[in-house]
Image (cartoon, rainbow, N blue to C red; front, side, top):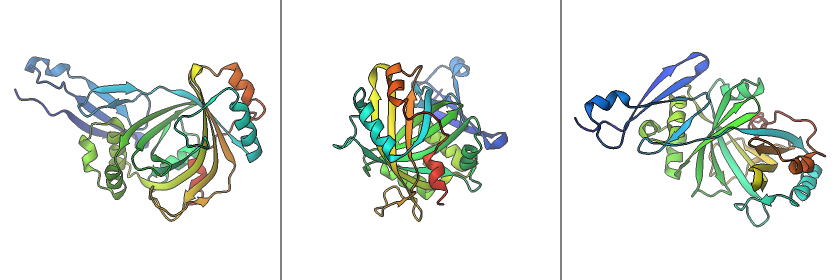
Length: 285
């Protein structure tokens, strides 16, 4: 018996536009006919919950963990105060520029009925968003991401893509994604085919990130939130338009938030908000 194809994908439409992606994973080497029935199936919910990424050969890579994530609107004074307080205990992210910050630009996807936007506004649980992200305008590292929200927990699944792959996706040339082998890429394909997901809005902002390694805590201060009104091109040299919104504080951790970090945040983090930079920028188009 000849070697089977590495993977087969099928799609089933469910209620509320959910799509189940069925990935059949075969072993790398040919297998005896008697063992064929034992080939495992990996179920990946595009709207969804526990999702595993898959490498080019169809092998399981890793399962992204859920993390606690809280957001707060803050003003410039709060941001400066927090930056000084957090800097006494937490380290700056090593990937930042000399000033301890970097610029993030993300292209978010939605459909013509704005499903992702209204799910966010209405607090639908669970919900998911797809985006493509770059840092400091650098095209050597482009990340395709799916972010899942369930109550106060979030899960981020990602795959690195090339600029050529990015350009194909935004141009609607997506047939290659079906057999790509990366789980997030295949899930976006399913949503673009089944739910008509398309590039929707650019979101850009400047981030000051802090990390606390002993407990894997990440605190970020996001300011100067901007959006691209007339362009959805991640690499458009034209500047994005300021939204003149509040700054955003994000706190992310796993099992617990250490008392020392809670103490540093306490003067500011009183009223948690269901804030979203995507939601802010969608008000402009």
